[in-house]
Image (tube, rainbow, N blue to C red; front, side):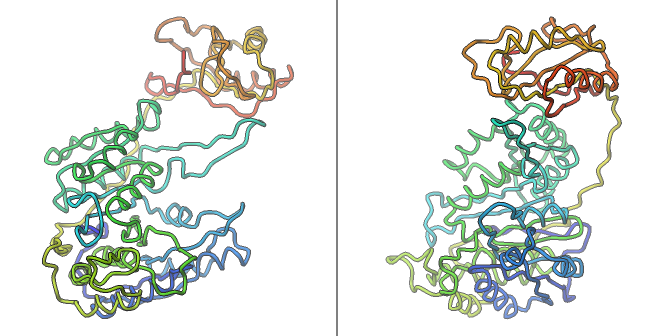
Length: 504
């Protein structure tokens, strides 16, 4: 919904050559809005050649749990650019998210969602908002690595990598630089998740120094989301991790007028995918009342990305003019202000009739004026000294007394390792726990070297050998303790790189 340019990394923005596009018509309302969108693109003179692929519900129901077959992967490999309508994931266990599969498998590391207000033609309480959410797209909790470990406890791993952080943060600043944005806001929760969100935040601060002309700020995600919902006009570009970005991009789209109006881009080094952010809406499928604006906005982002920004501007301005003239689909129709209620096909025809026109009141699109390409450098790993200093052993034990299990484990002192503490759901319960703390059957038992000084305000650790950890696990098994997982404790360049327990 914004006027930003998305350009292909390391390639020219302007081209008159025909570009091959992989088309996924999707499910529910997908085929209807795709038909309308492609009709507009053709009328505007987009230089594209389409190849359709089948993904989504029918592929799922045919027995493919991923929702995509090899033939579709081949289409993607040939075309490199994807325009995708919404798909339906069948209810029930065993079906993988196709969106997540595509984004991760194709290395689509950046999800870009611009939203600007269309006041007064689309109802919003924030007529001046113009926000771009830049969301990391490959990792975080969306890695989807989950395990049930005990009868009481399941876990989901939150994976944050330095290369992932560097790519998405740099993309946000490069985006702001290329398209005249003034500020980049980082949203994290590193007051609690000091290592994962802490890494994202520290990378943000490092990279921000390279862009002194762009204002940078950081906010805790909970209060940041609240401020964003209350005063979106105070934000420009927001960069954040996968889960937070998923949530706040929908917040931005909704307060901007409608989730159904917003498109998004998923950018990788070799492949890019463009899609509406709304669902497949099977309840209105086949009725020709769906608004194609989300997919159309995604298509204009696609055209700018492949070097046809002039065509993108032509379509976007015709779309804005249609909105101004009051030709509205049912989702944005207002009886007292809209001129005419139109269906999906009629809306597309009204846009086509206005190709070449510019809006009067709304800000016109100027994608063709974007400056330069966005280039993300190759990741350069920095060597560090990694030392093993202990191990967290997770034990499934259905007893309730932390003192008992703590005393039993303390007696072991096996292989020059000693018990430092026990936590339950992250709260220290041994030694010196509180009897009010509720305990499940999931106990994290931290073992460190016998010579480690754990009584200092800032503990000092001694190196241990991996064989000590293996021997410890063997002895725990012999004593009848059910070990469900371990996490080795490391120092990197002498810095503790593992969390403490609450209350420690």
